[in-house]
Image 1: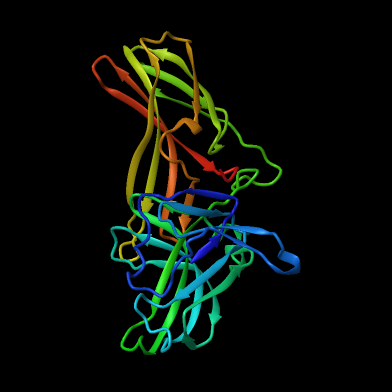
Image 2: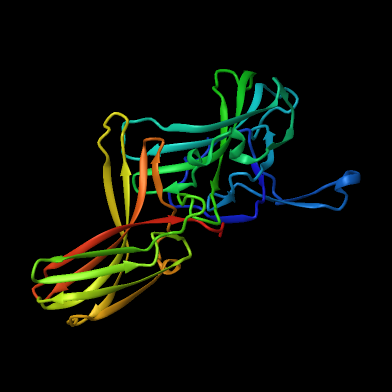
Length: 344
C-alpha cells in the first residue's frame, strides 16, 4: 500500500501494528514519485510515501486518504499460470485496542472499497484508491471522532488494509492475504472543542490549606490550553505557620481504561514533567508566579479524551506540591483540558 503524501508526516510511536505476512502479493515500488501523463497530468509529479514503519502519514479528519495498491506475484511465481483470486478489497479502519485486557478490539470506523473483481493475476497490477474526505465520510459527529492515541494501556489507531481473497491454483489451501498500512489522524480546532459558543474560558481560582497552619490561594489563567500554550498562574500564601522548604509543580497524565468484561476503570498515572517553583520559606502575603511552557514538556502531549466509546479516558492535571522541613508533602491537583490547535 503506497500513500499519496499528506501535508504532514510524523515519526511513528514505539508501538505499531503487527507486520504484514512475510509472503505477500502486496509490494511497494522502488521509487517514491510517479509522473502524471495525459493532457491534464502532463509534467505533474505526485509525491508518494512508501511503507516505512518508522514514519506515519498524518491526516485531518476531512483530508482525502489516497494512494495505490500494488499486486505482484510472489518470488518464484509462475507468471504464465498466474494467481487466481476472489477480488481485492480496501478498508479504512479506526480501532481501539486494549493492551492488557480480555476484551477484543473495537472498530468504531470502517470504510470499504472494492478495488478489483475476481480474476487471475499475471505479473504486477496497480490499483489507485481514494477515501474522499477521509474518516469524515463515515458520517460521525465531532463527539464521535478522535485523534490517534498510543498510551500505556490503550491505543486508538487508524489504518488502511488491503485484502486479497485467495482462490485456486497457486493460492489454493490458503486464506486471504492482507497488507496493513498505519496512518495517524489529528483533530484540530481554533477554539477549545468543549467551550460553548459565545463564552470565554474562566480562570481557575481555589483556596486550600490546613486549619491554623497553612492557607494558600492558587490561580491559573484558564482551564483549557492548546498543546503549544503557556500556563500562567500564581500561588498566594495567606497564612504560613509551618516551615516550607520548597514548592514543586508537576504535569500528570491519567489514563483510565474500562474493560467491557470488568466495567471498573483501571487508572494509570504518569508524571510528564516536574519542576521546582520555589525554594525556601515563603512569607505571609507573598505571591509566587507560575509560568509553564507546554511545548517544553519532553513527553508527547495529546488532547484530553473523555469517555471514548465507553472504553477509555485521558485526563491531565496540574499537581502543586509543598514540602516542609520534615519531608511531609501537601498537594493539590487541578484538572486542565488540552486540545490541539495546529497539526504540527
